[in-house]
Length: 337
Image 1 (spheres, one colour):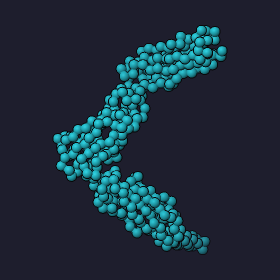
Image 2: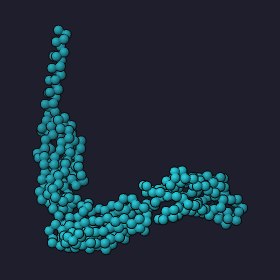
Image 3: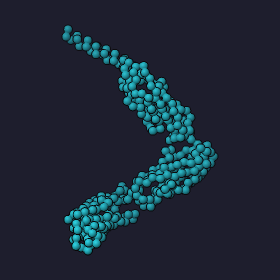
Image 4: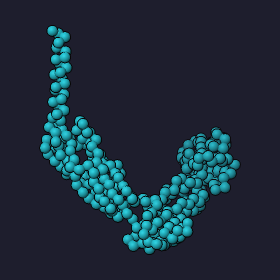
């Protein structure tokens, strides 16, 4: 008798689970594909879907997420009782596309059978002028200061028999700009040549260039530019300040910013004779350490009197690199007068 209870309980649990599943919330879409048909590039369109809870439990939508920024879904309500519906507004922007496009939108909810419901966005995007890269952004990776680097943006006329583009300089004049029309002997193809000049300052640089074209509807195209020239070497300290220290002790590491760069520190100078230094190659041709030692001058010293106890100078580091022969680090300390 006792053993007969086990299958009875198992059947009861199964019945409860099946009943619960039957009464669970169910997310239903009135359409699972949105086809915008033929669109022009840089065109924006809107549409709506209806979400209905066709189950017996409370439907809770936790998130609606598109797989790219070109599609923006906006949900009216996140909780639906059995039988209730809500509207999902969808905006699609074709600015970064050309040709057949398919994008996904995910609807995450507590529907036990379909917690990640997916619907599709489709469009056939056309542009009379095709720009590569389609993002109209041209970025240069890190490069050493003093090195000139070049990339191209190409323009293709999809209908016009001949393409002509014009551009002379970037807005901030940080980049060098030139144009090649009839590129590769193709009258429908032009190239915009962008160069990071050798004298571009170090650090992240941003600029843009406006390109004029003969294509109707695309008379001007703005290309965003970015570059990041870096000094070939970096120092662990960009300045040294001993303030009121009685003894000077400091270490400065010099390392390459560019992968594979080989360098050598050929000499060091400091215009403060009370500061001494030693050079150690921690890793040959890859890392050098300069150790500073010394002590402040006496407050009666004419230099201390003249500078009112504020002593400043420069540590000059010489290297064998043609593009970075010297590095300069300000050095200072203070004396109680």
